[in-house]
Image 1 (cartoon, protein in one colour):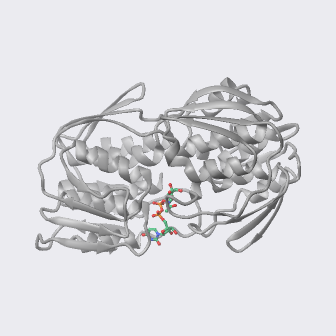
Image 2: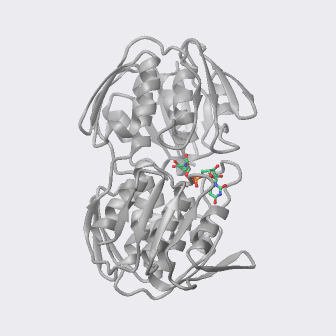
Image 3: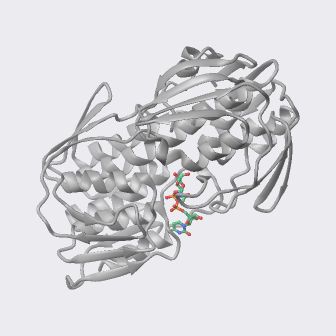
Length: 418
Ligand code: UD1
């Protein structure tokens, strides 16, 4: 089993271009199914989740080619509308194929999606949104059998939680319904705006993405298009937290700082100096990080659940206390036991975690249990005294392209051991 060996305590410095957003490219790849033609996507990160999505597209009959960070998807000829269980289990976002297949093929057959273990991750909102759009959905021995149907009529569907995945599924399915759909209580994440941007490039009529009411006029003929995926705000947050904890000065390009407002505010409060410009930010950190006001995860524009573990890892080796409250997922503190091995003082009570900075963490042998939790261990190890081994790289590779190489370029002592 390979692992990263990291010797902490080296300041980070230099400039890094952040790769395209995982949470954007996956639904956009699925959306390529809507067009009987060839779409070209730029800034596609090379991640295992992207490879798994491409495997699904190929299985459905698409021709997919990658050259550098450009992926071409030709969905002219689709041969099937079912996805086998082993591919569905690879990641959570495979569920987005439900809406895309319903829109293009009028049918979909797939099992429940996999993904990081963060506690229960139901898909009831996805299914009820699609049913509101007229889909018939049956469950037969763990397989969801879905057909589009119902009379085309203007519809309003309301999400009780602003679920990112359910909003995306509803947007894709609505493109295939020859009527007007309004999604109320929609997620407002930047990745939703990116998906709407791509769909509009295909010719879809969508208004309101980025607000909680999205309107889609479906049934409009779509045509092939070229699109550039937005930068990954969570990868950016990871590099910022690494520099904040390990000290130094790092410039990131390719990500809109406006998508990171909640994280930048926390890092500023913890004592970092920040400068931002269009698609660029610079963070400088000198002294140990200070404790900050409570960090409560919330749907966008609140503090992202995906950055909770990463910021916690940075603050655990700082000074002062910070209360974290995880409001999105039930079981998203699995990194805490690993951070404790490094000497972290973190007390968990239900959704809350009280972090008391211990000044400096020490190196340890660590295991990633999920994607962002794994990235958090890397952040902690970069700032810790001594050497750490972080195993479970398959989790990290789901969302970070060449994490070790990028950190080495910034001066970190990190290498992959077979
Ligand atoms: C969530 C994050 C997203 C992150 C992703 C991976 C939020 C709002 N969403 O997206 O930013 O990139 O995890 O870590 O922070 N829910 C249901 N029923 C459903 C769907 C969701 O109850 O059918 C609940 C979930 O359990 C969760 C909340 O709604 O408590 C938000 O889930 P959702 O946004 O769908 O999660 P992801 O799309 O996986």
